[in-house]
Length: 114
Image (cartoon, rainbow, N blue to C red; front, side, top):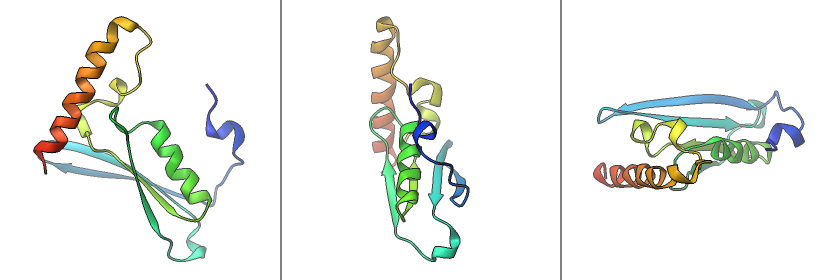
């Protein structure tokens, strides 16, 4: 599988931070990627994951946004409800039903906190 680092030039000037939040007995993670501080304040764009939850793709989108001048913040709506290792489509077709159930439970949990 090709990764952004396979085609993007290194960008050491980008600022990166992991943001952690704990609420309602759940732990959430966000990935902030911003252009160099010397550029001054920049607009923030929230990157909200699909039904599978926050994954590498969403963090890559936040990095892309930073590379073009925005601050990208990839946010996790599921937290511990759907563990990170359960967010990538299963290779074994026998695991698809459980995978779909877990993602659906993550979406339902989001509704409980609104």
